[in-house]
Image 1 (cartoon, rainbow, N blue to C red):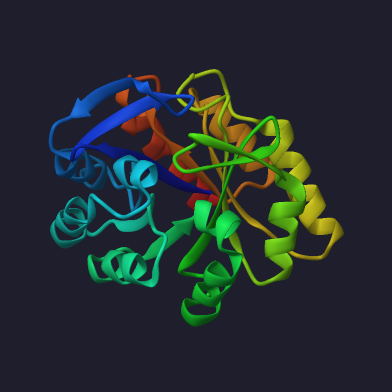
Image 2: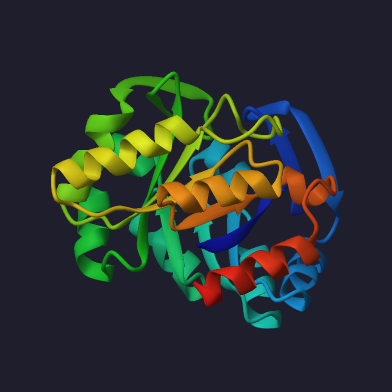
Length: 248
């Protein structure tokens, strides 16, 4: 299972929110590159970089931060937030992102998202499925839709999506444990339609036990944010976990 630290960006700084509420912002690093280098120095290979300013404004804002991280570290970065147009996508890829996570675009402009999927492939275009009460939320979680999570994800799996980052918004930043039963149901549903899912869990992860449970149910990745910044999970623990992954 891939361990993927999260860096969320507001005003160029590394921050965390609770349940996506911008009023709960806590800043952890003035320069996100310092966080990225810290993760890299401890053996991390992947990074989930979220442009919260971009998600709120509907266009990519913090691409220069992305460029600094991809040019000054070896981390494989997936980027999300505000990627709404072909120009946004070009900017993000030209700044070094290996993958782009499309959430709002997949809801509001599915034809564009599917064209990206066809042009760049399922290894580079990730589906972001962020939900509250199993309804998809968009625009940096500032807007709720009436689109149900399960049909949304399963339909895109059948259209060629492979990797899905799924966040239960009620869990995000709360350190209350991930939405295990939700992920189990998503994985089971994908099996039932014979469309294997590369499911990345996001939100609520607070202990190493959470990671062991997510791995045991079949999640292929886990995004960790506040638990790292608050010291609930140590880099040493993650190193041991990664070694276990390689041993299995």
